[in-house]
Image (tube, rainbow, N blue to C red):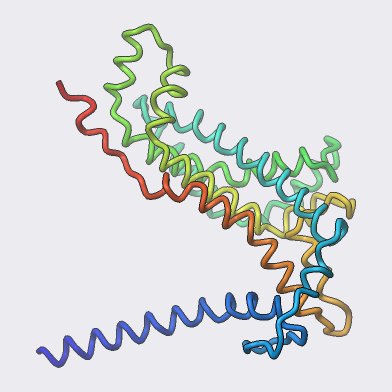
Length: 275
């Protein structure tokens, strides 16, 4: 029995190690190729270090303007998603109705719909209402596409905030909106952090939606402009592509670092309703 346990542990460790290597190799290639003057598809230690790849991509047309467009699109859509998800999740969490379960199941079904299946009617609708090739139209669609799962997540986190705290606020004269903003949302910081990071990351890496809804090159986000590094006849500037990928990943990493403390927190509110 002891040998079987040891062999199982070794097999599990080996499988986890292989999975870690599979995830680490692409990251290692990006980091090493970004400073490699002769970067290709191989993962190798560079013969010499260079910053030429970063200098080549740090221009307004290649990096600055697309990154700014991405920040405007994803930042605006994330803020809209979090606000709407909080307002939609609050009645689902606090009020009981026979329609709650069908509504939540509908939301869960909506999360499984592929965006590619609805882009043709969405494109036709945007053309009719003059939202095609506009940042505000793309922000609205980004928020709408992320809203179902965000509502589901927000509702689950909101259930962890004791209702007695709101009832105490209502006794002092607060209304439902005030209790949501001043009581519930501050106490569910980890939930807000999860929804914010999830929504921002899903939008930040989305290529298809802005590629379909935006037509002007100056409005394209970085997720679309990265395609410019793939030239004709299979020619790819691997070093510049890796350098751009490092820069492109920085906002997401910074966002995670900023909210990491809230992600590590939890709902320790059990004693708040005693006494």
